[in-house]
Image (cartoon, rainbow, N blue to C red):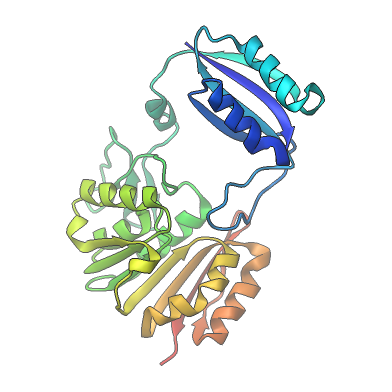
Length: 293
């Protein structure tokens, strides 16, 4: 058994309360939204919190949660710590609990993402083996699905591909499985790069995928550049991504909210891309274009 101790605080106090819970013996601390406030565009490298943040500490069974509450109240003031609650959690294999809600998914006509323990019966399927993990990207989010469907429909045989902001490596690995000759996978997060290496190995395409941080990226021109990030970083990266796409090459962008599509498309059009009509899903957008020769 485990214990959770939860408290609501203002955003300026969230990090300090998190540190205090860790000092008190918490095994982990997480943040939840206490006020139904969306966070669409956290700056790269930051940990976003909400104006009203629910701070959740996980403790081993038998810990004195009342004493911990008293210590935090004395440190921060009881009036700043609201809606305390406690919850007992039974032991379970958390990874498998997550996977109970994750099933094989098809993207386009032949590409499948399949978690461990499942199979795909379609003999013509291109199957990627991928489980949920620390790095974002299993295909369940509309932005990832839109990119996977684009890849499924594209002719990738012999192509050079850039996956910028690779997360779990899902887009780059999909490209390799669909015939790409080589993939450069880039991310600012070392965990994402490690996840990409492991997932590429698991799918037997590790020899065709090179991982790097942005500062370590070698000089090359890609036939296709993929970037499933967020609108503001995509606009800031327009020159960088253009420099990595050969004339006549293609760019695929997602992580963009519907109301941001025109602004992002306009930036890339000014950088020399002939942009295609946006594709929308559940409030998100995929943009694609060709670099003018």
